[in-house]
Amino acid sequence: MKLMEREEVESFIRELERHLKAVVDFKGFLLKVGDEKIRLVPVEVFEASKAFPGVQHMGLYVAKWRRYPALTIEGCMYLRSVDSSAVVELDREQAMKWMRGGPVEVGNRGRLVIGVYKGFYLGSAVVDRTGRAYPQIPKWRRIPE
View 1: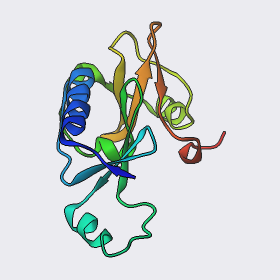
View 2: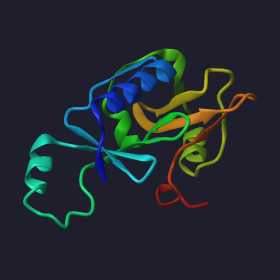
View 3: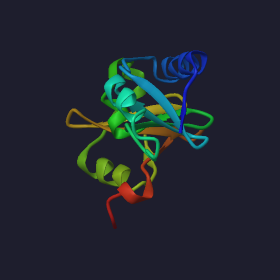
């Protein structure tokens, strides 16, 4: 667990803005866990954790940053505005497929999209050249078949 540098945070937010045309509002510190996962930790929690040297995890898992910054379901809650071209309105069948981790046809929208079902964010997905979105839902969180 490592506190992200200011330049790293700015780069991460710029990437989100570039791919999603979104405004994000992360209040607190961003921590890198491993090489890819990013957690958001409120200032008070971060300060309190200094008193406990053995803390393994803290904060809310909000994103994974590989080639593209993929927001988790909770990470999407920090979006203040998103360009409509980056949002995919899903019907019930598509939402179920999304939450099972299966690809969903979304058309040609860009490399990263946010799935929404009845006003609820379902996280982000990477879109391939054929217009299929591959949701970034962790295996432990997927709805079983």
